[in-house]
Length: 192
Image (cartoon, rainbow, N blue to C red; front, side, top):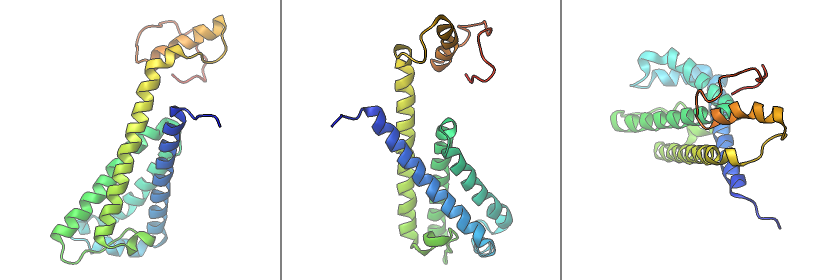
């Protein structure tokens, strides 16, 4: 059996984490949208969010859906992982605040998540915060590891035109600015 390389395991780990976040955010968002009135009433009962009920009721599912869409694409994966991590931190801090300062907390997560006890819900959120940290670590580790060795790996077709087209890409990937001033060989559809 062929031994799989480290890159495969890093990419698999990032994919598992992003799909778990996508599943969580889409499920939670559509549960809230499906029973929007109930979600809005529960937000109104919150001692912290009662003044901003409609705004929060519209923003939270929208943000969850936008983050899930961002997680679906490689180009927006790291910013979406940061957003996922931040949102789960905010949800966890909200649960801590509700548990500390409210005498009758009401869960407004929707669906199956609504059936959890508050302590279970907090541990669930902390688990996803941990997944966010691992996903960010894997993403940054891979990005910096690849950026340091990308110039050593053959990419694409080896030809004079291919080399000339590759120079700006490699400069951009290594964070070098101003190393190529001539854009004559750049195609309109290429992204740097």
